Image (cartoon, rainbow, N blue to C red):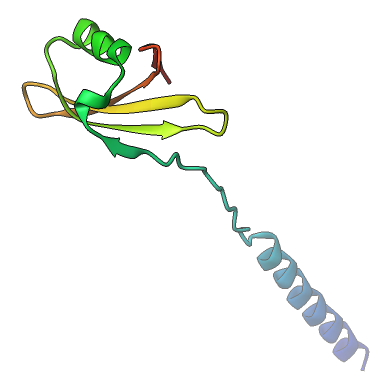
Length: 103
């Protein structure tokens, strides 16, 4: 009878430790929320002159494919300009209203 009790206790402890090991290996889901800017497409001619000047000065060898603008709550505007180089590779540059490159 004593052997049966010892075997039962060992079996219970083994089952309990397996449960603890499994529980400690669980991965928790982590959610990351990123606020995406809401850019509105605009005509290239509608870019501020300061932005156009910066693009001509800093990126003379690339073509401007498209442009978009995002207006913040405080009224400041950020311009996203897509550039295409001679090989067809696209890149984006972000500028403020003063033509200063940001990000």
